[in-house]
Image (cartoon, rainbow, N blue to C red; front, side, top):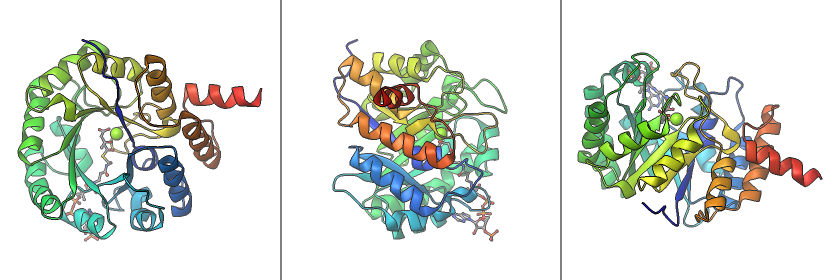
Length: 302
Ligand code: HMG
Ligand code: MG
């Protein structure tokens, strides 16, 4: 199959990237990061998460962050909303898109959102209805589609079942997430193709954590089967607090470098993303986890 000529990159650094940081990061720094990302050309930025602050303290500043960003026309700022409580906060904060997040693994569902998969779908139903009522975009995220830190293997049918339930809830887009980065290219193709039996492939995205260094290969494998939406985190930040040992998402700079090389348009300025990556890494006091980002930054120094 020929590769797509254009892809959509969803920048998840401000949410997935930062949610796992132990030190509290000020709202001002998060706002500066998001504004740098929108200036770089992203049309989709996962900016906030309206979850329990007891579960994920780092995201407690979400209302402040959403109020402080310089909104750019055409940019969709999204927020995680596990229940109606979170939805209310996201609506008040003027999120453009809300994300319900479930799992293909029962064990992970319990650890991450404290309920079974079936219960989670029941909780998501009113959120989905409210999103439609208020004209917000609705995205569904499915964790552990390539494997689970608690139960191990996850079947294709379990993934397909949650995809079908998210479709029934009216999701505009569904994320196939490799939470712990264990997937490999042929597996990813099988999962994507199975998911595509339940939901249009043009509205499926690949959300790959890079724990085992497979994320770029998995993105390429996904392109080969027609996936054209990918999530990435600037500077490779991140990890899920409820997925032990899982590292960040694939670094945005690396994905953009790959796309440039393949002649696939993203509409995003890689140089500005490198700047944003170096900015947040400097703030966190460590080197960015982006091979391309660090190489490009080093090259500038001559
Ligand atoms: P629960 O304890 O079962 O919920 O948690 P509850 O309804 O019994 O409420 C308990 C307390 O939380 C109450 O407060 C509620 O008010 C409060 P208390 O009376 O004890 O003071 N509460 C909330 N507060 C703020 N915002 C809310 C909210 N809801 C309840 N929305 C719940 C259930 C889902 C809330 C909890 O488990 C939770 O917040 N989990 C969040 C987990 C999380 O954020 N994980 C990381 C994001 S997912 C991810 O990273 C994966 C992804 O990247 C894809 C991938 O890579 O796999 C998306
Ligand atoms: Mg994630």
